[in-house]
Length: 144
Length: 142
Image: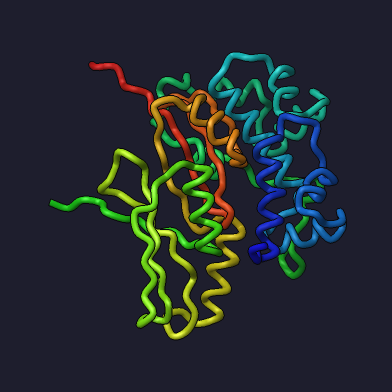
């Protein structure tokens, strides 16, 4: 058995979010992939990657949804379900909060996919994932 | 004329990496040389059959005096978090390569997907390095 640093297990969970966001996954499933209890996992994940596993999974889904809005003509509801989210209402709300405009308005902002530069998917996925936003807009202590 | 000969990635364990890149990914061993006079430094390289002039160096993270313990720990942590580097491989058939590697136990983090530039997929090596496997689309002659 080869020694692996603890973060390797957290990366496994992050990879599960990236690979299986289409499925009805939750933080419990990610914790299971890392082999940790939910509370411990959430704390360690945040320490390693700077955001909660919930936020990571949600923004992965939003990033994928945004890509589908830009590159396909599929309906908003269809896109919502195909990124693993189950409520179109809360998808639209969360998307609007994150991107500052509704899914339909977002789609209208972008030219057809064929006009885009040919950038590898990993780059698009890494740089295209939005910052997580909540209603309360958690701020680190000590900052206004 | 400048050409690319080798590119290096860090690995947690050279035996584990060697087994992964040869048995699972299907690369060939190019060099596996251990130098006792250099503290058993092991120069280990692998590459694809049919592309004999390019290889990937599977480099163990050295200890002092080459690398101090704190830096080595930082490199290990970066690797484990998946931020130490990426290798971009190409294939002439993304779907059959995906099935072949998956059948040998490679964990894909992205299944093959159609992209404007081709069909793209990704997996990780045991150390956490990101490996892309892409069937690049032939651009139509203009």
